[in-house]
Image (tube, rainbow, N blue to C red; front, side, top):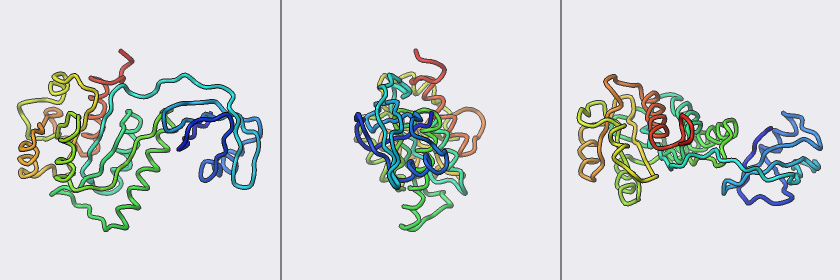
Length: 247
């Protein structure tokens, strides 16, 4: 069944508008009596029947609440330094499928991509839309949030004040791997920082270390930015989350 998300709590009767209503009526050619799945912003899920079409809106009636648990037991943030081209679109899609909670696009020293204020907001909206569609496709109960583009050092200073375990994936790290880093931790909130194509500058690594943030290795091979992001998400969800089956 088609899945949609609403920025409200589930009720007996709800009305949907906008892109979801357009997609159901014009693209899917839904009819009265068809059933869809609706998830609210608290992760509650219900099966609804279409009861009517009114202009550009669709009326729904609750058939049954659905007891599902598709969210990971860990809260994971991916802080991704801006890669070239449309790579962040792929990263956003796959990170959503892997259960990410938050995606933070970052500007770092070696980023080739630079956006002005208007382009930044347009890109954020586009990435959020990709996350929303990926969340619907893979059956998420909650949608991840794509935050505004932020300077790397500003974000690092902010995240250390939160109750989150943070690491930076660094190709020159030889002392500790990401698996070892994760296995030392007992919390449920994690953040991983991935560099752009040119990697992190030495100044950025030293700045992170001054804040107490560790750098970790993803292995012996140098990975592309998009590969590193997906690999890191998968490792975190395997070691601490539900990837590979619930523990």
